Length: 210
Image 1: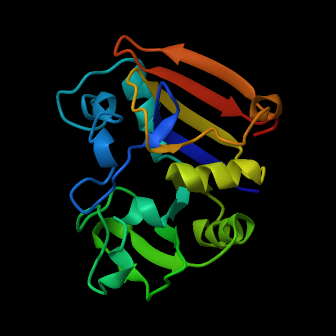
Image 2 (image 1 turned 60 degrees about the horizontal axis):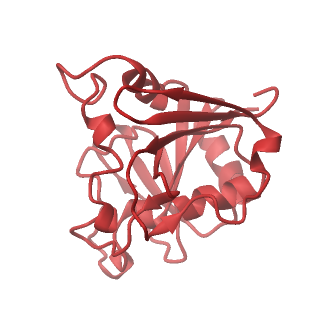
């Protein structure tokens, strides 16, 4: 069976995966780009970027992925469902290049984008969503893209086989936390941590047999 994987999910030192006050102009709320600046300097992101630990981890985002699941908050700002023309916060050529299943109570027809990304809008439980995404992935793995609430739900349901969390050395103080109500999660995984000169600590959780 294909794996459910998480890659490059960035959180602050105090565990927030997004800031407070998300809007059309602030996809990550008051956090801005601070959770992802480490990624923007890598070779994977831009020509002439840096190599090393950060680049090695960020490059694992795409290989072997056949579909993605994301929450409504990752697709767009609060209230996006009220605009029938809204096509997401990722531009005309989103960086997913696979079928993407957006978990939302406000379903709508699928949207085909440039570069192989098609957004499908489904109202489903984590288990149901993963079954649907696995069918679309055609034998490849499924990426659980977040945000933090969606990822927390999939972890609580025991559906994540591999997870890479980038712990960024900032304190946000408010927003949406990843780890709430997941006490003892580490007991189900082999956990490894790798430090980067950027100050980011890359923590991986690998389920036995994954």
